[in-house]
Amino acid sequence: MKMINDFKGKKVLVLGLAKSGTEAAKLLKRLGAVVIVNDRNSYDGNVEAKQLEDEGIEVVCGSHPESLVTESLDYLIKNPGVRYDHPLVVKAIALGIPVYTEVELAYRIAESDMIGITGSNGKTTTTTYIGSMLQGGKKLPLLAGNIGKVACKVAQEATVDHEMVVELSSFQLMGVERFAPHIAILLNFVEAHLDYHGSMNDYVTAKMNIFLKQTSDDYLIYNADDRLVSEVVKKGQARLVPFSTRKDLPEGACIKEGWLTVFGDKLLPVEEMSLPGEHNLSNGLAAATAALLAGADRQQVCEVLKTFEGVEHRLQYIGEVDKRKFYNNSKATNVPATITALKAFRQPVVLIAGGLDRGLSFDGLIPFLSQNVRAIVTYGETSSKLAEVAQRASVSHVTSTTTLREATDEAYKLSQPGDVILLSPACASWDQFKTFEQRGNVFTKQALEIIQSK
Image (cartoon, rainbow, N blue to C red):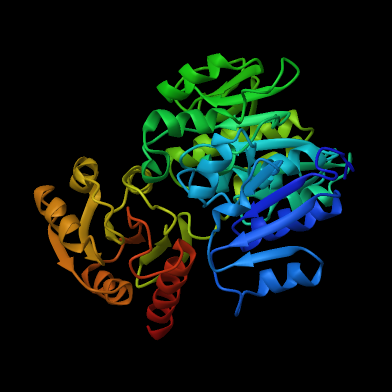
């Protein structure tokens, strides 16, 4: 890592622990900063806080005293989940104190090049794709960021022989200043996280930080099929590399004569792609383009496109019983993500949907429910809303349940040979589960119990 002096002797407040805050605090201490950590959770049972205290870092738990932010504070590093209307963040901004997320720290200390991936949907799949494609190439891949590995921790391990592949959320990208990956990917825009950002414009502005500090020596790979993406990338300085599943793009990546093609080179016939759906063709094109620009072996890229099994909770194939296939798409926390999943299948679908009620409309599902959804089983806070939408879409069988386990059992009962039983909730998980991963694990366990009982 680069032992930078940016934070040496500086007073830094780390707001919010969890993994990112904990690793940021450790790094800042290593860089010579005077670190104070503030977490809303009480000290009792706060393992991270006690660990940091043992390392000589001051910890304040259980509340957020405004006295922690004064003119003497040099930086505030916040956990990405901490909103910008948090009183300490508001006060810091008013005092002109820089507010960063740990991604900014990762960029400043990393000796390696970075590939940054953002967008509303497909980030984790694309990131994982790239990591697999880079194996055996010119540089060793290190995956980090929103994929679950704290970027500033991974960056400490990165050398010039590595390539950091970083999944980036809008929450993370709001807190950067110099961040400029050598290769950036902008996948798509749909309305998401507006409860955090306040408006679609602010959400898009946050995402744009992935490329705004890039130079003409860098690359910006973008989705030419997304109108808004195609418009905003014009504001950057990097070399633009488009990808499309619908247009012929000799200067980028596209589907040509039934082949996935990058820079005019045919990689793989579409029918040999392992993952279903146009959205995965799009993810595959973006990933292959980035990997090849970063020195990946062409044969490895093709092999990954052919054999990649997908990412857990993202159209993850669970298994088959009585000619019914189970797929876990718990990561679909919004309507557009569920639409994307439904479009991936041509066979009849028994859809399981439901979750936290954010007061959003589900009307966007109607045209897609009308196509190949044989039945829908709803559950959770949004059960009745989704059932009403399904009835308006003239879905043949509409059933409401209370829990996901009940919904999974009911979906199997409603299914027929040749059907796909698909968990794609169109809602956040927080009515019954702490995370979408926990929700997906419950579905997977129940699906496997059904499969093994037959």
